[in-house]
Image (cartoon, rainbow, N blue to C red; front, side, top):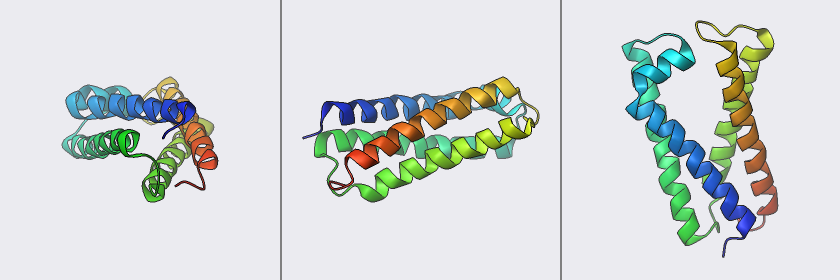
Length: 132
């Protein structure tokens, strides 16, 4: 049985990954232009691959809701590691004040979102370290 706070964290992750998956898969051109500042076919391909990975995370997290978090450590650690490293990468751009061809405000917003989710997932891992 999943506790309410754990369920809340999982649902937040589903919404988060679902939003980015839709943006990356359905609105690839606009997403790349708004978040990266430019668009080409290589960027589109990479964006779509990341969107597919995020969509896979959504499916797996929904499965965890129904099957429980027992023995799901590799997947949960993978999500935490991905979110943490992406947030560190975004903060690197913010600290160096080098947004490239996009806006520093957009990168800062993404850094805050990924950092928030990383912290939530770290709490989730700590709370459930014996179960996962």
